[in-house]
Amino acid sequence: MERILIIEDDRFFREAFSDLLHKEGYAVDCACGGGEGLEMLAGNRYDLVITDLIMPEVDGMEVLSRVKGFNPDIDVIMVTGDTNLESAIFALKHGARDYLLKPVNPDEFRHSVALCIQQRRLLNENEELKKMVSLFQVSQTIASCLELERIYHLMVEALAREIGVGRYLGFFQADNRLDLKEVRGLTPESAEHYREIVLAALPGNLPTNHQIDMLALPGEAGDGIEEACLIYVCNRGQFHGVIVLFNEPGRRLSNIQLERKNILFLLEQSSQAFENAETYSRAKDMLFIDDLSGLFNHRYLEVALNQELKRAERYSSHLAVLFLDIDSFKSVNDTYGHLVGSQVLREMGALAQKSVREVDVVIRYGGDEFTILLVETGCDIALMVAERIRQRVESHVFLAAEGYNIRLTCSIGYACCPDDTLSKYELLEMADKAMYSSKSSGKNCVSHFLLTS
Image (cartoon, rainbow, N blue to C red; front, side, top):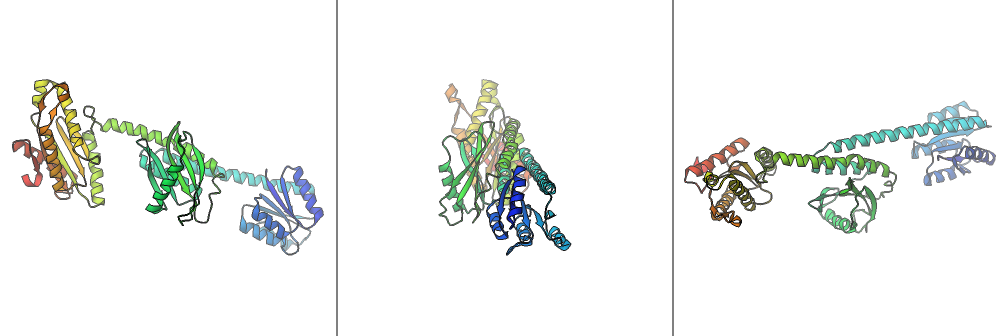
């Protein structure tokens, strides 16, 4: 229901206008003068103001000016007994919606108000439609993204922009735990402080549908943060994360309920991105995972090497590449058969993986060859790691649990970036040549390209 404020110092007209509008179904408030009307405007929301032009102290022109300065979207109809054409022109030029002369014809009065309200409804509907189209476009950008880290960032940014805040935390599920993935507007100390508060405030059973909660904060950190909006992100009954938006200094998150529909619309439209990303990830795993060993395959070498070389360049760090070949592996297949040979390859991959860090990448390059990327590792450490792998392979009894006593050795070659080269292709070629140098030097040894060339 639209709400209308009548500002009229003449009781007769004030009551007449009020009665007419009440009969039309509008909510109506009345003020006896301009000063009282402005006070009511400051504390209430109105769609239309009907004001007399000539009033003591604060006249209609002052009311018009103050209303338009306060909120240009509020329409103003001027009503007066003054037939001066200049007053009418001045009022209309300064934002009045209509200018009616007393005594006002009731039908003309009703028509003017109805026309004003109808146009305001159309404008509001148009603005809402434009807003929804804009939100839909944003959500489609998010939904089309296939990288989880990018989805996190886009979703949190979109919600923060919608609410109009610049400080937030974004927690998302990773390996059955909530990890802090997005931070903005907070120092590392503040982020950690509020991370602990938020995690302690989360319910034991996390929601499985989109949900918006408010969280009052103690405000003891001196950063002006007094409350937070917790937006739970879900899709198809599965919880994905919670986005925490903090109030700006000196402002409250009072518009959350007003924006609730837009927030939920954005969540509904964009949360499909999680399902798309998971599907893409599974498909990518199938493309990059070696069926036999469960390690990454040769297709992934190009991807991983590009990523790690960029990281090394960005942070001025090192990268080492190891090529490992099992010595005389053909004899395993000839003696025990290919099924046993496949089991040995799986065990070799697991042994190599246990010999390096989680951040390092172990790849079954093909046949009995493996490639290992050692992140942030220079030549000295690369030699130590390669030697550790060689010794573990030499001392390991393969398939001991199945009753076999298979012993093997391996030949390893390595090259480093930037020590040996900055070129991706040269790095691979150097490590490969170093591995063949180990083979030609009697096997069961480690070689560095520069030392063998």
